[in-house]
Amino acid sequence: MILRTSQASSRKSKSAIADRFANHLRRFKDVFILPQDNSYGGRIGSHVTLHPMLRTPDDRTNAVGDVVKCLGEELIPGIRNELYPVTSSFGAPIFFSLERAAAPYFGIKAYGVHMNGYVEKDGQKLLWIGKRSQMKPTYPGMLDHLAAGGLPYGIACGENLVKECEEEAGIPKSISKEAIPAGVVSYMDIDGYRYKRDVLFCYDLKLPASFRPENQDGEVDSFKLIPVTHVANVIQRTQFFKPNCSLVIIDFLFRHGYMSPEHIGYLDLLQSLRSGDCS
Image 1 (cartoon, rainbow, N blue to C red):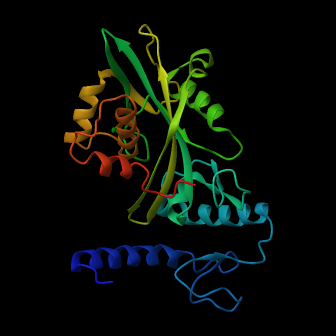
Image 2 (cartoon, rainbow, N blue to C red):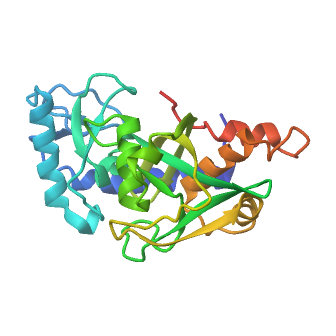
Image 3 (cartoon, rainbow, N blue to C red):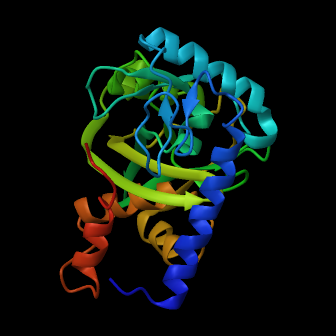
């Protein structure tokens, strides 16, 4: 295969960044085996493996957790003491659990729930859009969904969505339980040391016109009710939205008839919504 020079340079640069992060793991020889470390019979290749002496999920969780603490906020910002399950696919047995903020640094596939909260007025749909707090460690001040969150260890998607609705927007369970599961989007993204491999479960919730969201956990600065067509225009022309929120809203546009095959790039855009490993 022949790569264009710019593509080759880009891949080379990303590989070098990954190597730099891996080098921080070399001092934890009782936890990780890196490609050059073959003394334990580890397979040589461009990957990092866990030490075979870590035999149980609890052993692996505790050992990798200690490493994350040692690396600290300087290398892995936004540590939340919230565990993500590490599995081969959704619902598969758990290999170990990993600090949420660390998942993309180890290339671990993560799952989340994202909800489009909308209202119907005078024949048009409007979306409730949140603005993230400036204190958030990731994407501060950017536009976001009404409610969304990662899927931690030991909680089902629907249960997690109810929790996020209450914490982020003050939506009572009597309303949030009516949210409709509407499929998934998936993507991959490399940013510095982070290799994000996310699968997001999408939900739609039609809200009463009288409802007004109120943030409960300090992670959202404000909410605004915006016509769906205006939201689509913001996504098309700006970078104000947190990137994965744009994907979920574009999926909403397809499902609610705002996109049609007559739009240029219709199939390419639809396909891009599930460009990651959706398993």
